[in-house]
Image 1 (cartoon, rainbow over the protein chains, first blue to last red):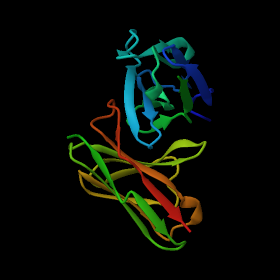
Image 2 (cartoon, chains in turn brown, red):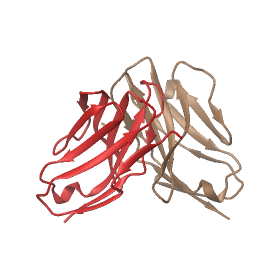
Image 3 (tube, chains in turn red, brown):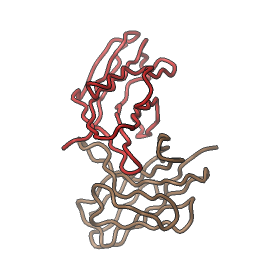
Amino acid sequence: AQKVTQTQTSISVMEKTTVTMDCVYETQDSSYFLFWYKQTASGEIVFLIRQDSYKKENATVGHYSLNFQKPKSSIGLIITATQIEDSAVYFCAMREGYQNFYFGKGTSLTVIP
Amino acid sequence: DMKVTQMPRYLIKRMGENVLLECGQDMSHETMYWYRQDPGLGLQLIYISYDVDSNSEGDIPKGYRVSRKKREHFSLILDSAKTNQTSVYFCASSWGCNQAPLFGEGTRLSVL
């Protein structure tokens, strides 16, 4: 069974608008960590933002923020005021315990000028 | 400058040949990873290393082995490469279990 699921394969948005990318995860652990990464067209994988499961406040970094809904096992990534350079593939990931680091299959974002 | 370096960046091998992919980091990170990325499958964990000579299988270890003799260096070895091992391989490293892994630029391997 997939531990981290991103149901949106691709999304297109107009520049300067807000986009939300969905991610749901599956874990039995009470403590876990959630991450979002971006993979650019060149293949580079860049860490964007993280959420610790024990923190109630949603994380925010620059124009990235998270919508953490723990009862729904959901961690959405919100990008406000999108720019052309935000076009990329976005991966959600989860670490539980000291072992595996699970990735979703990614959502491709296209920002249209 | 914090960086994970992978060598080589591109590699073409024939089926049955041995392959060595190298990864280095200059941050004294304890934990290092090898992933492969295929279209539509995302990033799949091959091996994880918690420190020198402390390696653990990931989700798809079959056909691969690893070596970590120094903390800053983690190798991925394919003994007798197969065509279905054609992929992009990423190395990553992190300090501790709650830090986001930092990724290298990837190695594109083609096995003909």
